[in-house]
Length: 305
Image (cartoon, rainbow, N blue to C red):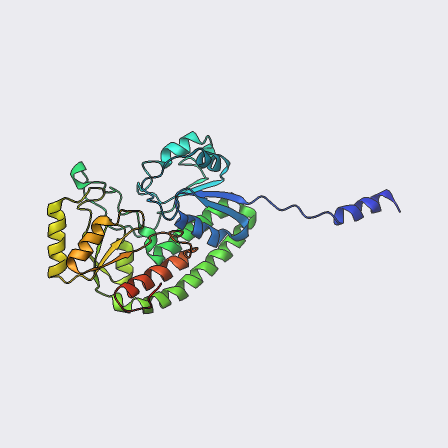
């Protein structure tokens, strides 16, 4: 057998070499979940903040710097949600490709509906975000926009697979439309439902599904409640017959439990992010879980979400 024939036979039997995946680091699990939807097997998406952590405050770890140093794309919620920690991590990671202004940096909020943009901001208002409320991913319509932002940036970074990212985006949006119909049907009993929340995390969710947030356990974002505020809030809950107090899983439940006990309202721990609980593995899981949890809390659904 000729040498050329032998080499050809040997080469055809070698395992194919997999192309390197696009390495994505996001600030939250929600963004990582959306990146996986549009990136599929072509990407490796990791989040810095866990779903059960407050994304406003994340303790920097050396492992985060290693992730960022190797990243091809960094995606943040923006609107100053991560202002206390993300910037310092980026500059310490020594990866210029993912710094603001470069192709590897993406602010996911572009094109999304941002609510509660204050006319002016001062220290007396607490931790108010001057660019608007940053919890915008809690409206599925914004989820579609975020997924589009990520898919389009991936197509720029990895142009050889641009058509794959576009196809995955279309598939995701199609499923989101179908799930949206399902969620709308589930949410019918929630239209006009008055609730109190701990932190102002829910304006986009409330607008999308018809809830009315009439008060907060925090008098202002990041400001502890005074006895006078608690008394006024309890009076309002009793007067307006508000049936539900919602709290994110990373806040102390003690005061909301007291408010619920004093007023007869139900207390429900409502996760705002993918990964808040083991069962919430995807963006779709998040809305499935939260809608069913609220329905259960007001006696309109199953006992467990």
